[in-house]
Length: 109
Length: 115
Image 1 (spheres, each protein chain N blue to C red):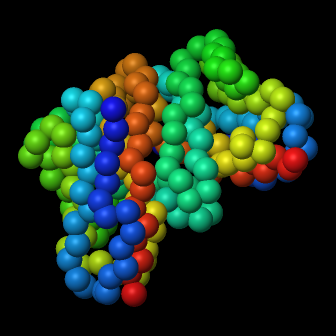
Image 2: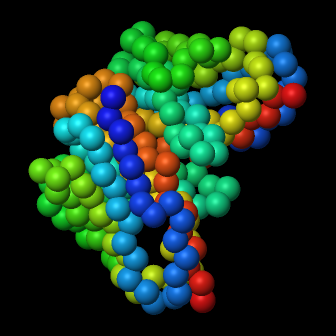
């Protein structure tokens, strides 16, 4: 079973700061997912990666398959980015995703 | 609009009273799954289904049942709920699951309290 570790667990930053959230996993995967969960809200898929880098607006996700590591970056952070960010991996089998415990991000104005 | 719906969104019930949480998707997805989310433990898979009439246990299936009679629906059944099933439940779907990655679509969540 894959083990997914995220860091940091909690992060508080000022508006405008560059944010990095890290995710590492123990076993080879078919894809890595970055998810966003707002307080009291549902879960939204931000990115799905199997290699390289993806960008959407102010969000950038990278993955290094050899090192079993991914990062999520937020540029010019804003209070509306405050949420829990969850890393999840799919192993190529039918048994779905394995999740990290999430990173609770607070952006202060 | 492509979506996964769950009902009810909130439920307070008593120990032993059977309940069903419905899940429906309108994207013709083959793969559907149920997860529970608990503080400090994160999201864990309860059951999943690769297609109609094909279901299998996830990591925490005890106390739960599922069925997949139609492609769009995947209800979660608690035959005799207990307080340790108090949790936030998410249904999710994707086109498929396997050697390729597929984007996951999550329902809005059902907050269940069992007293």
